[in-house]
Structure formats: structure tokens, C-alpha cells
Image (cartoon, rainbow, N blue to C red):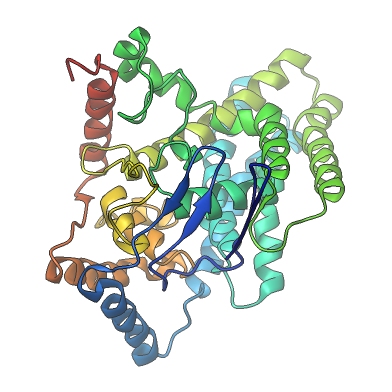
Length: 392
């Protein structure tokens, strides 16, 4: 990782965020963050050795396998087949709206199972396959450059650290961290937040990508080699035009439906996907068991990077096959955060190793046995964060 700060503008080049280091250094306009160089009793060294042994002993690759590739076909089918049916089959409008919701389910499924692994370079051992499958984000309303900076660099490095991990920043409307400013309306956030969660991906399509690209390029952030800004802006604009053509213009041309009904269908698709993706994230990081560490006045954090992930991340429904299948293993967030370059198809097996090692070193292993329990705890936690700080 190379870091350069000049005139309060930051450059971060992280080509390969692999979890076999225990120190990271990052600067913002506000503060320099240092993870501890000391791993608790060599926790990660022991864990990494055991995980390496698991793959060597079983003679398997860390990337995806036939199960993942078959699942990719299923997810793309759930995503695209309903849309194709809407365009080609004469059907009542109520059925069209049901199919748009199913398309939203498929949209979330492709994002979690295909795009996510691919942009972590774990879908396949072949780079071109990862790049191709990672490009699926463009038909999900996103952008590869923005996603890699926000997710691979900021979120995976500085998990749950305010002003660094943008995934816990919802502006003023929702208070995800006790370190964020409190407003009186936050007292109601446990009630209204669920309605806002569904807006995640439609914000990507309309405004978020443009704002992020401007911000990230200005700060010279990148995952790997810093890209050509003009090229990235060109790709963003062209991809958005193609996206709007595919999901809005094409239905308007093909279907004998008034324009506002097409927009409603577009919204239903996005709202369904956004709700699923938002909840999966919140259950992994915004729950009572996870911490929101604050660096000291010199920017130092108490733990090494790997141990930090244990304190800030939580699993849910580990024994639920349907949840594990559909979420792309994102219910195993502990394993994913420590080993982001290993495909999610291996997380269930790795969980046994991680849990055992964490226990040996007296470190936390956060987990909720069911999705229902995690959801209940999440909204209870929002209620606590919504109380006036002096009362809470």
C-alpha cells in the first residue's frame, strides 16, 4: 500500500487487501489512522496458517467452484428472465409488477453472489473472468471504480470507524454510530429507517455514483493503480446511459403502458433489491455485539487490523442453508472480512476454524443464530442510538 498526502489530498493505492498484515496506515483531511502492529498473541498468524492448511490438505482453490458458477446462472436467471418475460409476453399489469419485484430479488442475488465475489477477485482464479463478472455491477446500477473504493478500500480496511467507513454514514437521517451527532428526530429512526433502506440502489442509479466519483477522484483514492479521471467519467456517463436505456427507455418503447407505470416498476425493482442489500449489511455491522472504535488523539487504534474485524463484524443465521445460498455467504461476515479474497463458498468450513481460533485467543466471535434474532437486535440497537446521548 502506498500513501501520499499533499495539500490535504490523499492517495491510497491498495492493490491487494489481503489479510496477512497487522498494520494499515491511512490519512484523511481530519486524522491519520494507525492499526496496532501487535497482533494479540499472534492470533492472525495462527489463523492464517490453519486456513492455508485447510486449502492445501483438501487440494482446493480459494476461489469459486462449480457450485458458485451454477448459482451464478440461477441468480442471473432470477434477475433477467422476469424482465424478458415482461418485454415479450402479453400479461396483465399486476403480474408485471410482481415480476419487477422478482427482478429486484435477482438483482440483489447477482450483487451478493456474483458481483461481490468477482470484485474481490475471488469468483475465479482467472482475472478476465473476475473482471467480466465484476462488470455485472453496471446492470445493477453501480460503478466498478466507486464500489471498489468504498467497499474494498474504505469499508474493509476501516470497518465501523466513523468518517472512514462510508457504509455507516447515512448522513443526518439515520444515526448508525454513537459517535455521530444526535438529532431529536433520531428518536423515531427505529420506525422510519426500514422505509429508507429500500432506496439504496436507486440512489446509485440517480445520484450516488456521480457524487462518489467526484469525491474519490478529487481525493485520489483508488483500489490498485490510480485510474485516468477522464476515462472513469466517460465510463460512468456511458454506462448510465446504457442502463437507463435498458431499464426505462426499452420498456417504454416495447410495452403499451403509460410512462409513470414503467417508472413505478423501475422503483419496485430497486426498492426490493435495496431493502435486501441494506438489511444484509446492517445485520453484519449495526448490531449491539459489534463495536464502533474511536482512534485516540494520535489516530492509534487498540487492535491490529485482523482483530479489529472480529470486534466490528457479526455473523447471522450460519446454519440456515437458504440464507447462506442467497446472500452469497454474507451472513458469514466475520470470515469475509478477515479473508476477503477467499470465495464465499468456503466460508462455512472456514467458520469452524475462525471460531475455534478466536476462542483460543480469548477474542470475540460475534454471531446471531437466526436472521430473525439479528433483525430484532438491529432495530433495538437503532432505538438505543436514537435516544438522546445523555439518556442512552
